[in-house]
Image 1 (cartoon, rainbow, N blue to C red):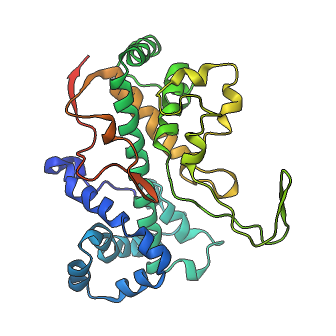
Image 2 (cartoon, one colour):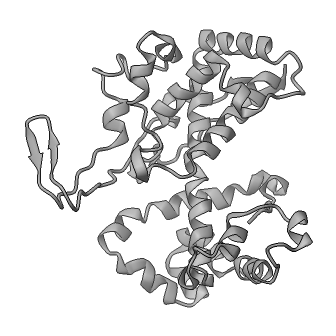
Length: 319
């Protein structure tokens, strides 16, 4: 919506919201098998819905909040060439309001709210999980961390000045660390079927008839020892080898093709900038955290660790 929800100003950074969000995601298998379930839930009064499905409260809060309605009304009343646009942060919603290619049916409050929820959900835990995973593995591998510190110190002499994302991508070991973090955090781990509706698909000696769903899990690729030797080990160096370009096509945390994640470039920018800033400016140490706090124990479309885990906990001091 072009504005902050202010979680950094909350005690504990509003951890409850994220905890409840992760509980809400556990409904994904119910929704996939009973697609009428969310439609029915939306028809319930807010108080009843919150009582019956308490883990859905974060999304209930968004769906029933007035922020989307008020924003939409404001955007639709601002002429496209109005000077007021210059004082507003550019948003997807502004473009939807004024793009003539977007039909009236796609400009309803319901559609806007669904789009807003999608942005919040898709850009939330996936990027956050990757940052947790890469932080753990860096701190759990002192030699790897030492190499990253050295490269960041050389590439960014003044810690108060952080290069643009395009510059950070040119820092080779940082890029390798991030690729390895993406490999071990997986992105989405459930199978996402693809169907060819027009032509049959030929794969090696097999012919897959049209209309047949085909899918596989990201984990099946990223944990494949024939592609990534010692797949459970955090080895950024694998991305610096002569065959790194060949490996790149097997890195699929954002999926591939025309249905790839539309927020991929935003996620890359967030990850590069966050990792560069944190590890250039601070020293971290693991605190009461083990590998089980980042390993996948449950598949709810996105990966989740074992129940009861408090996530990655660290000590922090300025470098």
